Structures are given as C-alpha cells and as structure tokens.
Length: 275
Length: 275
Image (tube, rainbow over all chains, first blue to last red; front, side, top):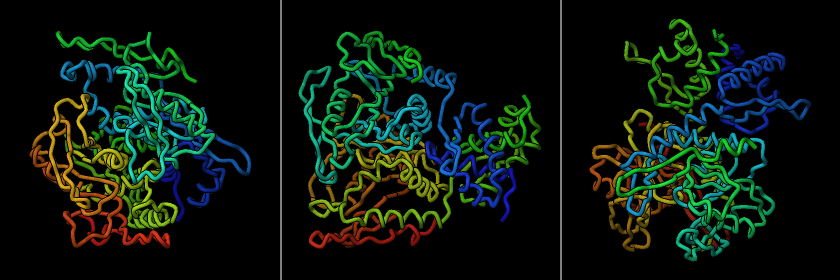
C-alpha cells in the first residue's frame, strides 16, 4: 500500500509522540510507508516546524548512516507559566487545608491530564541532560515520576518505607526526617539501578528536604549520580533546608489555619533558568 | 496566520492524542486554524482513516451545535497479542524467581513505554463503558492505574494500607487477605470519590483476589459501582477465587523453585471478548 503525504504526517506524528527521546532511523519510515527518503525528509520538516511553532517539542536530526530523527518534548515558557498559575489557584483553595497545616493534594496527583503536563515541564528542563532513571518515594511521588519518565523514556524506581518479598533483595538506609528529626528507613530493590547511572529525584512536596536527602544517600549506596531534583511544591524553610539544587513549580509560604488562608507563589523554576 | 493542511494535520493529531475521550467542538479547530469548518471536516476524515488503518484508535463524530469530535484510544487485537507474548517472555525469565515462589515484576511496572501500552490495552476494553474513576492499591498498582487513566481521561484514586495526615479524613475497612487469611486494613481518603461513581479496579497481580475484594468492599462504603476489574497477571487459584469477573493479560500457572521454571500462559483477555 502506498501512503499519501497527509496519512504519513498523521501516522508519523503519532509514532514520534509515542517514542520520545528515541533515535528513529529514516529507513524505518521509508520502509513503513514505501516512500523515498527524500519524501520522508520533507514530511519530517513539516512535523518539525509545526512542533516548534506550537511548542510541542523539538525534532533533532542526526545525519549519517547511523542517524535518524529524535522527538524531544519541550514545553514553551508560556505554557509552564500557565501550569504554575493553575497550580497556585488550585492549591490556594481553603478547603485543601488539613489539620497541622498540611495541604490536600491527592486529587491533583491523581489527575492524569495535569500530571502529564507537569511531567512534560520537568522533562523539558532535563531534556539535554543524561538521565537514566527517575527515582521517587512511595506513595505520592509515583504519579509525577511516571509522568516525567514517559516524556524522557527512562524507567522509574520507587523507594519504599518497608521491605516487601516481591522486591527481592533490597538495600536499606536510615536517614533523619527533616521536619520531625526522627530516624526513618528507606529501602530500594537491589535490581533497581546499576552503578554509574544518572538519577533524577522527584517528589510531590519538599519541606526541609529530609526525604530527598535520604534518596541522595541511597544513590551513594548504589554508586549512582544525582542528575537533578524536581518537586511540585516546596515549603518555605530556606534556613534549615538540607537540599539546595532543585526545581520547584510552586512555593508554599504560609498556612494560616485560623483564617484558613494559604499563601503560595511561583517556585524557583524560572529563577533557576533552563539547564 | 493561515495554517496549511499539512500543518493542521500534525497539530490536530497531537491535540487529539493529548485529549482522549474528550469532545472537541469543530469550532475549536476552525477558530485555532482560521479555517472553514468544511476544511476541518476534511482534515478530520484523513486523521480518522489513518487512526483506524494503523490501529491507533477511533475518531467518533457527534453532529449538531453541541457536537464535535472525540478520540477513543483503541488497540488492535494483533497488538494486544504482541504485548501479551512480550509479557510472557519477560516474566518467564528464571532470574525473576523470588523466594516463596514470587515473581519480580517491579522493573516492568517501572517501564513507562510498556506501561503506556498496557494502559491502552485496558482502556480499549473499557472504552465504551462509563468509567469515572480508576482505583488501585499502593504501591505496585499505581503505574498501571495511571497508564489506564491517561487513555480514559479519568482520575486515579490510591487505596493505602495506613492512614496519612495528608489524606485528610479517611474511610477504613477490614478485609481478609485471600492467600494468608489474615485480617488487613485498607484506607481511602473520603474526598476521593462521590457516591454513584463507576469505578474500574486495577492491580498488577491477583492471587485469590483478596485485595481486589477489599477494594470492592470499599466501593460499597462510598456507594460507588464496580465497572470492571483489570489485572496484569493472575495466579492460577481458580478453585478458591474470590473474584470472577475480571480481565487479565497473563496467567501464572506454576513456579518451580527447584528447577527454576516459571509457567505462564495468555490470561483471559481474549476469552472474555470485548465488552
């Protein structure tokens, strides 16, 4: 069957979006569509220009026999600003206030469309870095970790509080929880990572940074390297902060339980600039 | 700016893929691209035919003033078969064998590309059903739940073993774990679901079905309805099974720890037929 350009464009767009950060040889498309490489190149130019125009992402071309094309998800700054504003409005609703000054965020973490966009924000930041693994801690960080992972095409590993038989052999560490100063335990399946891998740590919420710091210690046990830290919300605790090099979308300043006011602002995403 | 058809096709494909199961008015596209509705209709016919030809999914059109177009992710039977075969090969590797006859599956659950495809399999099965929520239990079911949710455009709720301050008020139930016959507890944030919602339950592994049964009891507490059950792997325990109406991709027959042999076969997916 001979494909028309219009059909090729639809199918190619689908295929590229489903395979982010993967090098796809031009022969894959020319064989699939029974078309000359020159036609495929023209198709890809149209896709590339539209992706860039609309802030969908980049198509990078690697020349030569071992070359091909690669889709890099990239979000426009305007869209990131929009997501941050949405998050500030959502999290500022007074009915999210929980006893002890905590915020209810579980609904946002369970919203697949919102998580998909948050994942693309962080995948954009780390698009040019070598990332081999995304690490998070159970339970609430998992949806963010998977959302980032899908856009970077790398696996997710989940650190747990307790060891389970289904995890096989595990490595366990003790760490000091930042806010309560209690000793806590973290375990990770031994098979999760290989030494030398570069790891992006992510979580939904960071207070002093004790949990993130615990994950950093785990990286050392696995002889892995920290590639970056991405959190959805950071709480203002700068003086006691255990972690300094991270990206956050939103900063939680103050929670006034009496008047039921939640004060939020933009996180450090734009201050840090793109990598 | 006036858009060319080729550019519209690329952008439209992207937009539709990012908004599964959402009704998009034709005016959205005609305004965005500054094009006549008749041109947009022609574009959508091309997208629709390519999506169907390639087994990407369906585009359904709702006529009239309140109408529009909707992308329904649907996987071809051939691709489902391919995923099941891949899963059987992967899970049959003898180094997955853990003490007690358990299988190590964490790496598959952390693979975003594989999870995305598994999510599309189950989203295809339940595409014509009214699903309001996907429910799973922490920790291992979360990646499957989110993968399905993304293709159905519905939220995920995560049942936990313990109550956390960040969940707010919770509903808690006791249930009998199927295999060990121990009494266990499950909790779910009260805000997670509204009465009357239709819920798809999912998990990575089902033995006797105690955990799934526990989630069914939780549904009753919330006055919600069971819409379906989807598990990645079921273990052969048909005689004692507590749950009967479910979809599985793979069935685990026997684990021979001595000879390190894992026996697997296709689950009930194709026997049950599409809904």
